[in-house]
Every structure is written in C-alpha cells, then in structure tokens.
Image (cartoon, rainbow, N blue to C red; front, side, top):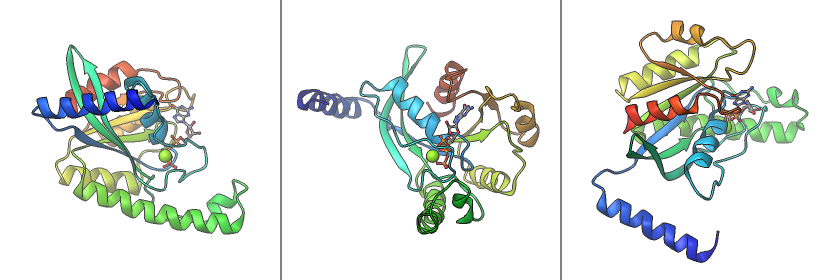
Length: 215
Ligand SMILES: Nc1nc2c(ncn2[C@@H]2O[C@H](COP(=O)(O)OP(=O)(O)OP(=O)(O)O)[C@@H](O)[C@H]2O)c(=O)[nH]1
Ligand SMILES: [Mg+2]
C-alpha cells in the first residue's frame, strides 16, 4: 500500500472514530481446530476492506493459528447502515494438544513438539480473550463433524455465562457429509447459520446476522 493511501485511510479511520459515538465491537472468532475460522476471517476482511490483506494462513493441518490475530475497523454495510467490527481470529480450542497429531501430517518431531507447545499457549490465549476482551462471538463449526463435543459445550457454556451475543456458524456446507441440523439439535438455544467460508456460500445471510447481532 502506498504512503498516501495509508495516510488517507488512517485519517478516515481517525475521523470515523471521532465522529461516531460507537466504538467498534470486538468480535472473537472461536471454535475447534480446522473449523474454518481463519478462512472465514480472511473472507470477511477481503469482502469489506480495500487492501484485502489476509488475517492469517489457512491450512488443513490443525492448530495452524497459534496466536490470536486481530483486524480492526472492518466496516460492514447493511441496509444503509454501517456496522464496525474488529475481528479476532483465535487458535482452535481443544482439551489436549498432542504432538503426534502433527507427525501424521509429515512434520518433523522437533517442529511437531514446538507447534504443540505453541498451540497449547494459543488455547490459553484464546480463553484469556474470551474472558477479558471480546464483545461478541462467532462460533464456527465444521458441519461435516459431530458438534456434540466437550469443548463445544464447555465453550458455548462459558460464552453464555458471560452473556456475550453469539452467532453459531455451520461451516463447510459444500461437503457431502455436512449436516446443519445436527448442529441445530446440539445447540437449540442459539441460531445456527449455514455457510461455506471456502466457497463463499450464504455470506449475505452471515453479514445480515453479524449486523443484527453485533451492530
Ligand atoms: N470444504 C470446505 N473446506 C473449508 C471450508 N472452510 C475452511 N475449509 C478448509 O478447512 C481447513 C481449515 O481451515 P482454517 O481456516 O485454517 O481452519 P481454522 O479453524 O482457522 O483452524 P486452526 O487455525 O487450526 O484452529 C483448510 O483446509 C480450509 O481450506 C469450507 O467452507 N468448506
Ligand atoms: Mg486458524
């Protein structure tokens, strides 16, 4: 990005903060490893920012995201209104990170041990953000897998006890094994929106709901 463009966008950001009475809502993207949290975060950023920088790398290897990453001031326009959010892509939460998981993906032992240590710290960091620093949660699930797990029930329970607004996204509906109903049955107290973050399916409804829940 050129210096001038940079400067211009900083000024417009500062101006919009100055003239709007609403601070951006900080939205944490949570869920188990490999659910598609980073793919979704990248899509949101690409759809709504000019520079289209990505939040982080997407990978079929679990625990690719091992530090929370934030993109600020994403302005989503809905029905003539603008909702400004900061997106926080978090590391996938699991009860245990086992280094042998990485060996199955042809990663050398030293690197596998390093990644599993980082991933464990990442889980702690994700939990810290959830306790202290988010205004709302997008909970991403891979709809081709069983949603009724310890981690999902525990995390959704914590989110509920914090009284944070939460939107459940049933991702990967492009896969044949996908079942959105299975997620609705597991968490009937919340609304579940189907999508494919990879293919970009049903993103309009996702943005409508983001504006409704977090605007
Ligand atoms: N078929 C399909 N694959 C998807 C979709 N969204 C993400 N993926 C794939 O799922 C894998 C994991 O995606 P990521 O976005 O890295 O998942 P994550 O939740 O950020 O994973 P961690 O960072 O490990 O917690 C990648 O191979 C993605 O291409 C989707 O909608 N459909
Ligand atoms: Mg990720």
